[in-house]
Image (cartoon, rainbow, N blue to C red; front, side, top):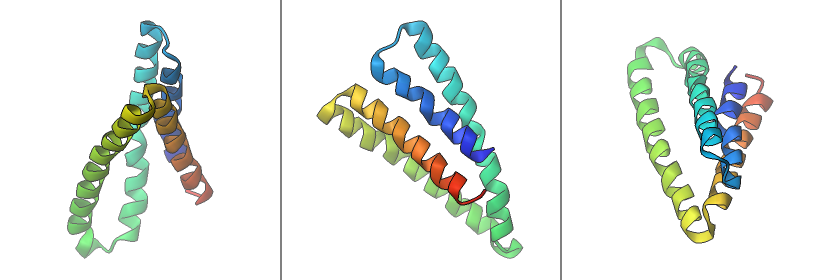
Length: 109
């Protein structure tokens, strides 16, 4: 379920590139919020890959990395929005998210 949830997280935001009405923005944000369950599927793969004696440290590193990249994403797409407009930034963010799901799907997870 990781790849479908990642798609659910990102694909609806493509609609925001077209300045939809406010009710549709609410629906899109609700759908994207449902996609935030994707890390639960990643954790099982992560736990299986890390020896038990290193899991605490590995999960700390994982959390730090996730928080870092969750901060970098808005920074990058905010800069894109400043340079080329919000519509382009939203479309690129949706494309990046769906591309990530495709990579995960291809890996056979």
